[in-house]
Amino acid sequence: MQIWHPFTQHGLNEPIIEIETSYDEFLITKSGEKIIDGISSWWVNTLGHKNPEITKAIQKEAETLHQIIFAGFTHKPALNVAEHLSEFLPENFTRVFFSDSGSTSVEVALKMAVGYHYNKGQNRSKIVAMEHSYHGDTFGGMASGARSVFNEPYTKMLFEVERIPYPAPGKEEETIKYYKNLLQKEGDKIGAIILEPLVLGSGGMFFYPPFVIEELYKLSKEYGVIFCLDEVMTGFGRTGTMFAFNQTNIIPDIICLSKGLTGGSIPLAATVCGEEIYNAYLSKDKAKMFFHSSSYTANPVVCAAACANLKIWKNEDVLADVRRINNFYQTQIERFKALGCKNVRILGDIFAYEVSHTGNDYVSNAGVKLYEFYRKNGVLLRPLGNTVYVMPPYCIKEESLNKIFDVMEKGIKEVL
Ligand SMILES: *Cc1c(COP(=O)(O)O)cnc(C)c1O
Image 1 (tube, rainbow, N blue to C red):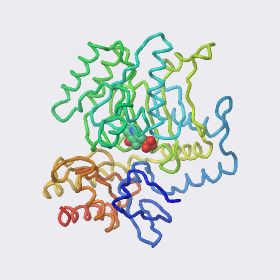
Image 2 (cartoon, helix red, strand yellow):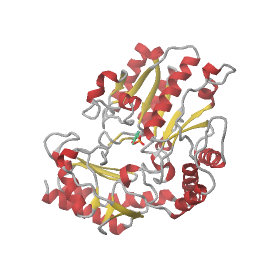
Image 3 (cartoon, rainbow, N blue to C red):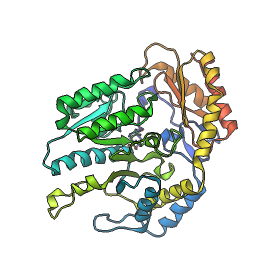
Image 4 (cartoon, rainbow, N blue to C red):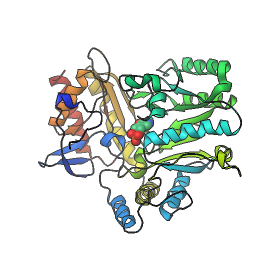
């Protein structure tokens, strides 16, 4: 039996590199090569690989309790996650529903929102999402995400979603107006809006400002639409605050968390909401309960890892490291503009730009060639088409940052 890897065209014989161990910002290959993980192993790793406190918590819980059924039963690690999460979230967030990945946290959010209206006797099953958005690879996630080569074979199977335009710089008001018109026309059929706050990740690291979120939220409230933020990527410091919505003056109805929730160690997801949504399911009638579960929901070992991560966030100034990285980025903007890069932009732990090359799509050759070049030079970066971005674990040392940026410069000069 051989392994079929994700997002991999095996027909191109891309080498698959065996990693033996990892620490901090480094992946160590079987042959002993050290690779700098410039993208936090697909955005999951926040504190660095194999954080000692998280490792200890996993070891300890592994000797205490493995998976148990979570309907009708509970355990200390899950209770602790709920308690620790509320230390970081506004009081409005009173209920946490566990699942296992970013995609499932989105599925839960969408089902939660539509079921809320259903239990109130309303048929509001339409979802609104943003152009270029990404919400995972399960069907609900694909349906709400951008339609592209990623999901083309399944187009007919995906439920219809109303899409508001991406608020590109200078076009923010158009997005707000578009949403307003949409609500005026069919606001009573729309159940929820789901957005990646401040940055559309997989879509190409497109940024937009907090006031757009505030305006879309206000409109949603006027029309009784549930406001969901998919913070799977933005959560846990990526944009410079613990959650992206902390940069706005609104409190969303639902947030989805996953990638950084365990510091990037083992998989867990949480969909968090308030009492209003929860109460719509609260009844003596079993038919009104929330019909959702996954077998490994709230795994105790995973919950222990999340608790250890949240304790670190409580006791240490994690965001100071994000600021340190951001300060470094600021010194690099002019350098990359001078190299001919377009749209050089930074937000929190993210540095991104476009390289000039014809055709900006995921399968574009520039990204593939750059990826190979970076890897041969000991740096892991996976451009999204023509968009090159850096998003390292927050423990990354200046020496490693310098190496990433030097290799990126070399890439521009030698590959393109
Ligand atoms: C990665 C991501 C997801 C999907 O998470 P998985 O854990 O890969 O299922 C959903 N939404 C956003 C914004 C993401 O970045």
